[in-house]
Image 1: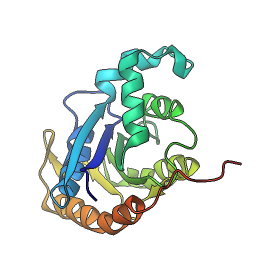
Image 2 (image 1 turned 120 degrees about the vertical axis):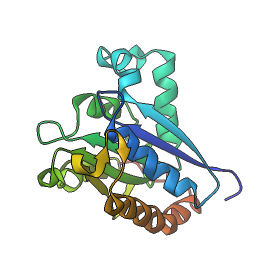
Image 3 (image 1 turned 90 degrees about the vertical axis):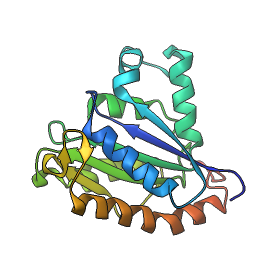
Image 4 (image 1 turned 135 degrees about the vertical axis):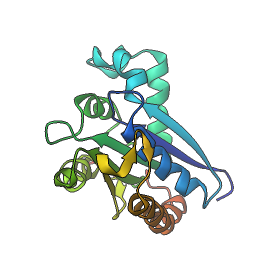
Length: 190
């Protein structure tokens, strides 16, 4: 790739500081350590108030439109949400409700989530993967889940989590390179 990889990390957390934000950034920077890349962070704690009252994309302020375009133009999305009532946060879903239906076709997406304990780990398979399946994104096979025990405060601390992050970044590279070699948005819309 001749230009830097555009990695957009989206944190669905509604608090700051946040373990979810720390996780998506750790993943994004693990990928960026392996390829020439620029990382951009989108935090719902920062944009949520401007997003919450909008019913249509035309209702959004220019700053939110800029964030949506960054998501739609990303070469790699790293998305994460804390588990909230057995799913991702409502504002996380609301943000992606404004993303163009075909804007993420073929875009690699690395899925992540945080929760209080291991019993919430299936959020990646049962909530996040179907959402990005709707967009026809290339959800990467290895998602990263982290529980409260994997952090010291909001810092990734568990060696096992660090290993999962590194493994996910390494396994993502061939799929990211594959997606970059073709125009994934050149599809027939039905």
